[in-house]
Structure formats: C-alpha cells, structure tokens
Length: 201
Picture (spheres, rainbow, N blue to C red):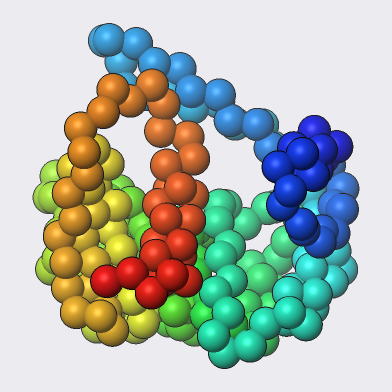
C-alpha cells in the first residue's frame, strides 16, 4: 500500500483509507499475435467482514444522495456476498457497481445507480448466447430486469452502449494500439463520473 499512498501524496491527491489484510491484487496480461489476451491474477486481497463494514461506514459519513460511490472488481472470497449486498443497500450515495460477482436477481436487490458489465458479463447476466453481440437490446433488458437505474455495456474496442435515465446512446471510441486491457473498465467508470461531476452533456 505504501507505493500507492506515496504516489497519491506526490500527485497532491488527498485520500482516506482503511488498511485491509493481504496485499494489493496484481494483474498481469499476456498478449501475443496468435492468442487472445490471457490474464494472471493474484488472489492476495482478503479484507475481513469488519474491515469492509468499517470502510462502507466511512464512505457513508462523506456521502449524500448526490455522491457517486464506485465499487469495482470481484467480491473478495473473504467477504460474504449477503454481507456485501447488505452494506451496498445502506449506502446514501449513487452506487456505481462494476462486478461480475452478482446475478441479475442480486443486482435487482441492490438496485445500483449504474452497472457496467462487459459483453461477456452481460450475456451471462441475461442468459444470452455468447455467440450473439450485446447491444442496446441487452441494455434495455437489464433495465427491465431492474439490474440498475442506468446500464452501460462495454464492447471493447468498439465502444459501449448506454440505456437509462438519460436516454440511450451508442458510443464509439477512437482507434488505438492496445497493449493490454487491464484497467480499461475502471478508466471508463472514472471518465463517466468525471463527465457527470463536471456536468458534461
């Protein structure tokens, strides 16, 4: 954690944090011209139930109904899914949830402000054949199932689709030479929240 905290301090980013057991999860991408991207992930992040509850309590202290609270990634094995859902439901802010750990029924129970599954995750969430390309119909179906108030389905280098309170959109992204996709989803969420925070169209 020291490495990240020193970088935040160096860049003038103030933060509050709760230290958890284990170490920061590492993600390594292996890319070649003949094989699809392969990821090697460590499983070293093991926050306790109390640690997670303390973190969510602190987040709530700084939140109101206009605060965006983003939670990304797989739910750690050390956190019971029911406890995770219960803590999410207590949040005052607008929950942005980017995880493949919850089913459509569980998402409907939490009813986050925004979800951002990728194409494969959306197909699995909705029970759609993996041979079919996700698009606005899948985003609309996610809304009908009450998985969230707003739905973004990321389509990799093609861009993403959106359906929700602001209407519908198909978003294209500039072509670029991608070295690895680690962090792309987090960056997408960050960009969207930056736009909302600054009242972009």
